[in-house]
Length: 215
Image (tube, rainbow, N blue to C red; front, side, top):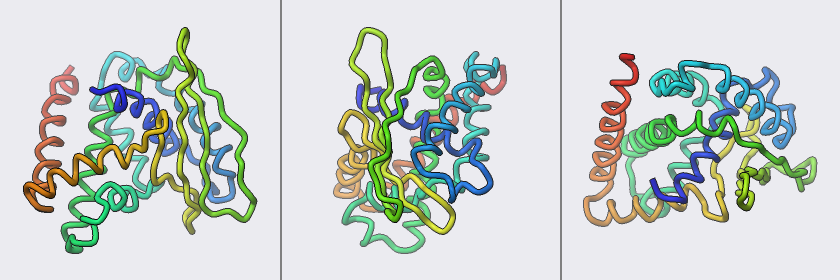
């Protein structure tokens, strides 16, 4: 795992944390308060779960799958990651791409999430107007003996509440980080080739998780 994607694991930890304990009236909660409250709750939740702490990746994946979908705009994330190639995809290809990309994000970082329950977080005040519908929530991951890692969440207000559509880790966009890789695959193998590539990665990650699930 590259340094950028390792840091992205910390970002996705807080991202996926949002999905596990959102209040019923989440759309009325300011985005910065939502990030802070739920992130701290999930840090505590994972820290107390012996199975997750012992490496039960399958259980963590199950937790994420059950809670994450309603609270993240994976369609927007996938479109941003594909860039111009998104407009060339058919409706069915867009559906498959979104599904596979969502699965890739969940599967890739699930095993890394538990490692961040010991991290300390600094939540910056939100710089936005009450009427803003697109904001950036700034968080810093504090590391002993190292510089804090800046994590900036791009969030949009929808009818269903605030949703994350991108995250910047150390100044690097998670979505843009995948865009280069995706564009290279599309250039070589087309959109169907990218779908196949993502599907293969997901099957490989599922196979790696299987032994842990049997323990």
